[in-house]
Length: 167
Length: 404
Image (cartoon, rainbow over all chains, first blue to last red):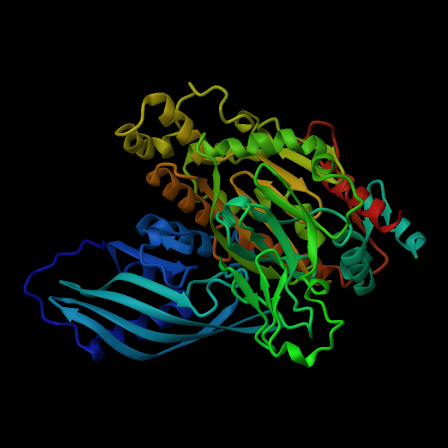
């Protein structure tokens, strides 16, 4: 379902178009509509939450999350299974994504960096997770697709907590 | 005082106050964490002269350093002048630690080297009187421990019967040696002993980690059906214990002719391009890690394929480090496979740890009720991997240290 048919040359991805895509993604994640989220991805896309903020070759480092397509699907299955006590119920989340900047855009791909503020609530506790998020988007025959998402938490190398949802 | 603690630990149960009483926590920091060998680092984290990492002994921040002669030093991270921290970098390399408040500087062994505007002190002032406070340090198989006590038994003796198990654990270096490959950290709102128990708790595994188990292929899921593998728990003295979950993965170098599990077939194929078949089997076996957890009292475990370190923060808060390990200089493909396996279960967004953390927090929340009730540790058929033998061993050590 994620087959990408890339036709060149492609129309550049505009900033506004990218923002709308990213906002939709944020809304899907807060709503925990994970199947719809999975469908946003390209087949070869990676969802990465690094520990080392300066890492370039994430595959060579230990990460918080380093998901290819199979791991993303397994992760979603787990979160939705009802068998995981950190995810059923998970914390509630509300996230805001802003400070968008297009780093690169050519030939139907774009790299967008933005800021994400996420507030989670569970039991009697409300917590914040802030991150720089870098998206690589790809234009496909079905619209934009998510080819890479790197969520770089400001405290990625500090002690976090059990997170039962997606960033 | 010690009589008070004596009656809180029985053979098969411990009192709820062990999780919730701040006074007990305070006493533990002195009577346990300042009184025995506490794990602070793995040798590979400070590989060179001048390498350092920040760590803790109980509540006290320390710096673990390697001197020019290769010797390891564990130093309190506190300037001898007016207490400023002298290091705020998690790890790195340095020749000097400087207190940024008034500029006192110390070398990598803790010796005070520089005092700005020294003329302001009278002639009785001697820099030799003010080194960073240095702890006693000993090492076994790359595991570095420190203690405030100069008069307790050597580390070797303290680890005792755990040592052969540590040797078996280190076989996952596959002849290359074991190297730290990254650390995941998270905290949970609960007492440190809840985590200490968990490393020797097979009982929770199929319940808490059901969603992890369903993410595995059938062969691996069978392997992780740990209550049905014929495993056991063994007390090893001084509060240490081992829980063998997969008896066929005790000695990673035994039975190397066994078929390579399906999930490692692609890795084996890739390794076969550059390594002879025997080496491929040995490396692939090592990638999967061991089938046992060694719980070392009070703060570290060698857990299947990683080091688990706990750090008490307060009576109801604990920090956990999940330290991934790799083969030092081993094949990159194999080491990457190890990292991906670690990420699968461990850390703040692994398929296992968040459920553990949630479970531990629920223990702490539940322990607010029934202050007179007991925590039951009476599960214990011999040779049953889900027996609470390891927990009983840890609490007997707790009792020895808290109510001597």
